[in-house]
Image 1 (tube, rainbow, N blue to C red):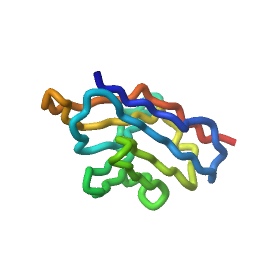
Image 2 (cartoon, one colour; image 1 turned 90 degrees about the horizontal axis):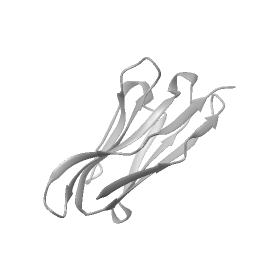
Image 3 (cartoon, rainbow, N blue to C red; image 1 turned 30 degrees about the horizontal axis):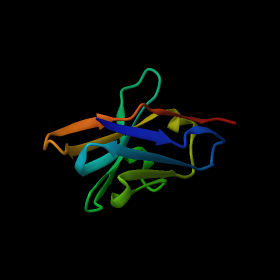
Image 4 (cartoon, rainbow, N blue to C red; image 1 turned 120 degrees about the vertical axis):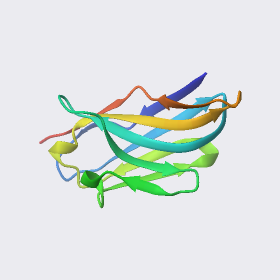
Length: 120
């Protein structure tokens, strides 16, 4: 009854930019934390960035200074602005939300993932 729908992935050249969006919908009472994780082939999933409802952010070391996470609480949407992209940023990016449903159950939800490929 809760869906996370991502958009904005694609192919970009090194040094380029992309903006990912993730909209949560369904039986949502409130959203605590929204974030982005990524997984490259043969590697473990890692945190890219997350943001609390109050706007506190946390970034993975490899993206600090290049990526910016933001959210629109009214739209239950989180964004990831990715600048100065590198080939090593290539991965499937997945949106995550820790939220409270209208049944007052707290749980984590995931989007389907969107591919980001950085290549010349």
